[in-house]
Length: 178
Image (cartoon, rainbow, N blue to C red; front, side, top):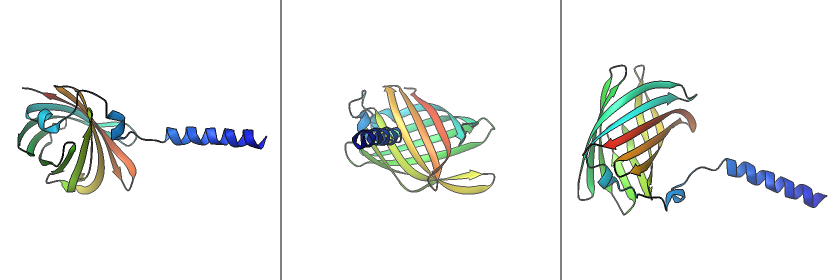
């Protein structure tokens, strides 16, 4: 009887722990097409996105015109955002390719250095960002996943946390124009 109870508890614990697991880059190692930031983010692109609060309620929509170019291992991505309420903002990324699959990035509203790595068709980027809400600036952590759909299209899902608690999410679609 003890052996059956231990076996049942072990199975239950395994199910609970596997339900709590999160995706890793290794999960995408064999996916294609392979994502190379210096190839996809090169030229003119456009993005359409939505911002959600922690409960899943849509807060805002936006469009971003993106102009990106690379010289060797250095890239610049200039993003011009227009939100549905008329707000406009700019983020200019300075990226450096550090290895076959490793990237770092900086931008004016990014706190410190963004760290990113690709595997197969996916990129995982993590960084802290200063965001302004109702006249106050908050620092949030972004776990940013990008998934290359094909050579012209990419999907991006970003979870925003503060002190490890989810405070929002951004989902966007990016398409190459040339």
